[in-house]
Image (cartoon, rainbow, N blue to C red):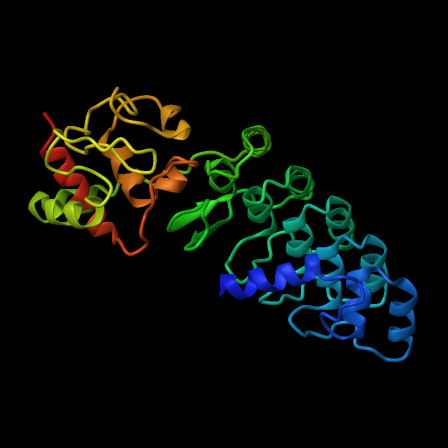
Length: 314
């Protein structure tokens, strides 16, 4: 969400608050607690079924996994696709908590599978990010767009740059469950997800300047990689290896470097085409990579960098 600290505080309040604590208005709290009698009475008395405080009653019920309350609110005209900055749509809210029963109710009722939350993530991307396998499977079955991308800027499973569900579901961090990651990747791959490399821009490459590329590589890549020397290869898991002589080398082939599982599976060599795509869109070219793109590189910058990398290859 736009302010992660505020979002975390809201979620903590919703999850941990006792039923007696007031989180929103009476209708919102009845929805959160699944109090059907109170919901019916409040709606009968004219309460607005779509009242938006920091969330709507439907979003509150979905986030809390209150299936019966979700069904009642939908029957009373709750807007399935209304969004809030706190929880997104009801489908986002249910997916984030893994309430697959509620997810299925919302999908059956016609919820938009590809609506975006405040960070631009779809429900499928949220399911992958949060390792909600059953919700992810339900969304795939409902036709969710497996190609959808968003710009990650704060996610520990995204880095900075364009990401998709496959990257979010396979990027390894401390709190990942390897079995869940594997199952999520398998479900997405079976549905047709996969690497999405971008085409080589031959015109830009023909005009690229390796000297400017050297400066850009030092500035943009030097924080994680050795750019001009192989003498001190960086081997920490979160860092990268030397970029000297990478062009034409077998991908993930250095014995003194620690590679992501995703990069190990690429195979082949670092061609001009692969370098251009990986520098431009690493997380779409190799979903699950630890490469963190910063988001402000132009395609001209990419061409200059690749030109430099090719110029220093043996």
